[in-house]
Image (tube, rainbow, N blue to C red; front, top):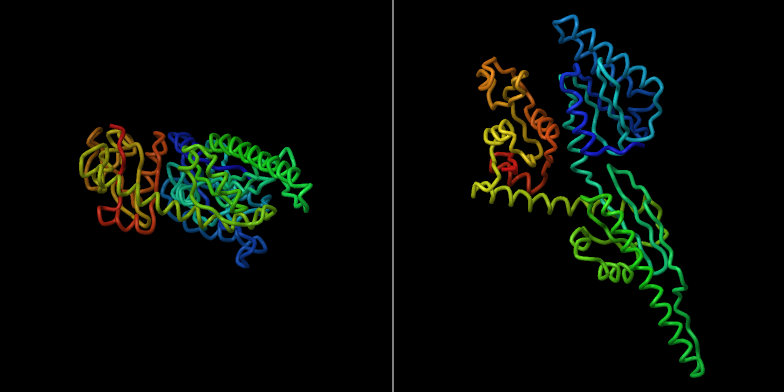
Amino acid sequence: MSRITAKDLGELTQSGTGAGRVLSVYLDVDQSKAANLNRRFEQAFESRIQLIGRKFEEEYEQADFMRCVDDVRKLLSQYEPHARSLVIFARSTGPMWFREVSVDVGTEVHWGVSPYLHPLVEALDEFEPYIVALTDRAHARIFTVRLGTIEKQAEIYALGTVRHLKTSGMDHLYSQSHIQRKADENILAHLKRVVEVLEHVRNVNATARIVLAGNAEAMSELFRLMPKTLRGRVAGSAVMPGNAKQGEILESTVALARRAERVQELEKVDRLLTSSAKSDKAVVTFPLTLQAFNEDRVRELVYAEGFAAAGGVCETCHVLFPSDNINCEICGMPVKSADDLIENSIAAALAVGAAVEQVRGPAAEKLRNAGGIGAFLRF
C-alpha cells in the first residue's frame, strides 16, 4: 500500500493547473461491510456518475468526463480491495493517480478543474503519523502509524544477557552482585541503542508524535534517556507485552495519539486568536483569510470541523472572494460562484506549500466563536 503525504497533495494540486478537468473518486471498499461485498462499490461509483453526467452543457466537457469515467471503470474492474477506502484522481489529459487508505473517507465523486482534496486532507490531518516504541529490557520494536496502517521500522535486541539471576548462600554473594551489575549495564546499553534508533526514525518522520509502549520500568528508563527534543514529542504511554501483535499495538495507541492531537489543536487555536488580536502574523474570519490568500501571505490555514462557506473564484487569476456578485479586482472579469470555498482555500494552501489544519472538539468550538477559520501568515 503506497503512502500518502502532504507533499503528494501539493503535487496533485500543482499538476492540475491547466491540465484539463479532474474526476475525483473516493470509494468505501471495506470488505467487512455487507454493502461492499460482491463488488457493490462499483455500483456506488456508477450511481454517482449518473448524477454528475446530467449537468453538462458543452459536448467537449462531456467527452472529457466520459474518458475519465472509462479509465476509472477499467481500473475498478481489475481492482481487489485490501483496505477500507480507495482514492482515485483521473484526468483526460494525463495519468491517473490512485491509492488505498486504511481509514474510512466515505464515498464521493466530484468533477472539477482541480482534484477534490478536502476528504483526503482531513483524513491526513486527523490520522497524523506517529511512532510507537515498544520496549522491554532485552528487546524493542519501533513502528510508524500512518492513516490507520502500522509498519515496523526497526527491531533491536540487547547484545548481552539481561537476566537477573537468583543465587543462594554467602559464597555466591559477590558473583550475584557482579551478574546483577552486568545485567544492568546491558539493559542501559540496550535502551541507549533504542534511543539512537528512535532518533533516526523521528528524523525521517519529523512531524510525528511518539507513543511509548511495553514494560513500565523500561519505558520510564527510556524516557529518562531521551534528549529533550524527543521527550517533547511523547504523546503518552501504554503498558503491554513486548510480543504484542501489530493490530493490538495499533488499537492500544491510536487513542493516545488522537488525545494528543486534540490538545495540540486547542493550543494552536489559542495561539492563532492571540496572534490575530495583536496583528502578529495571523488573521481570523473568512474575509481576512481570503485576503491573505490573495496576497500570498498564508503559512498555515486553520479551520473548524464542519465550517462551510460559499463565495466566488476568478478562474483566470485564481483569486478568492467572499461573494460571487462582483468582478475580479485584478482582471475585471465576473467571478464564478463556488459552493465550497473551503475546498478552494485548501487547494490554494497546498499549491504554495502552506500547511492545512482542521481542528475538532473544543478547539473547533473556540474557533467557530471567532469566525470558524483563520491563518498564520508568512509576513
